[in-house]
Image (cartoon, rainbow, N blue to C red; front, side, top):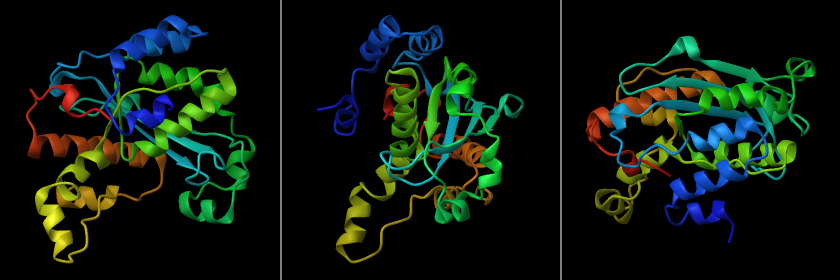
Length: 240
């Protein structure tokens, strides 16, 4: 069983994994990333340095599709650091389809002069280093980035995340009330980013742009914690 498939069934020992990867990393950038990614599991979420991560891809299958843009927004539960935001359009290793162009509006002309992901990877990881990544649906960002780094650097890039979709699923898909609603034939609540934000009264943003969706994810986590948790809740309660 692979490490990634294991993470979907049981919470791994991230501290040990990250320490092992820091010792075995082939380059200084990845070594720093792994060495500084092991935040104490008992750290209050209100004190944790965070970074929202979003990617647009040519499709949903990591074996057939590729990354076309990346957005990063460093933040904490008290403020969002827009001055430190990062956004890149990158040249995908797979051909753009008409469907993907309609979805994320990144065209052939936009990627014609775009860099390969390897060119921006060190800057990207430097922005993420020392911060806990926050995503909305971890089964896109984490496997796509892992696959891309394996292809370019020859080593895996797995890391703990907070998944805001998973936090919504706990309440609206997995709770006893949600199960009762399904039993009586009610449709499940949507846990997509736009619909999740609407439940907290957050404004509607244009979706499927990596930087805007990263900002939207950061704001969603702030709202989730404010409504359902305490700033003293340990980081371990949020990890995926």
